[in-house]
Image 1 (cartoon, each protein chain N blue to C red):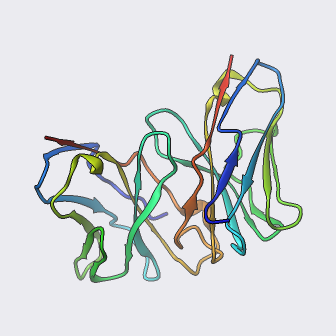
Image 2: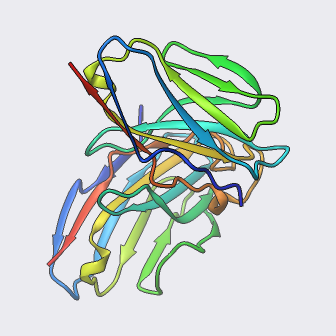
Length: 113
Length: 115
């Protein structure tokens, strides 16, 4: 199973760049890395997904080193509304074993004014 | 619909009662997942459907939990003889492809409180 390890919590301030790193030492060749964001009383929401190097969208960037044993979610210029729990997941998008997708406890990000 | 819809949003049950939680996935999404999320924890996998077929139910905690998706769209999670430890948020998610590693769209969840 491709288990992930993330910091339990992080604090930052409005306007700062926040980087959350996830370790996934047992990532398999076909596995992709996906990040979700969850606000209180809501279901998780997809942020970004990548396989290698760098992926960027309108919300975040995802940096993946060559060995793919870790990844970093980068949130530019955070605001108070970015306060949420962030989950890193690994798995094969074309695979069929849904139960191997493990959310873990996530990283609780708190943004202060 | 535009998103995944779950009902009821909140359910209070007395211990021993049966409950049914409904999920309306995004139209055309092949896969449907149920997760259980305890307070302060990440979602934990319960079961997975591909169309009407339940391909994985390894996460269901006991035989009191039952899920169905008879026509490959709407799904119902049923919990019989509820216990206090069943109190949690039950999340439903759907995706276009047949894997949870694909992009999942979650509903807002159904919060179950068992007294």
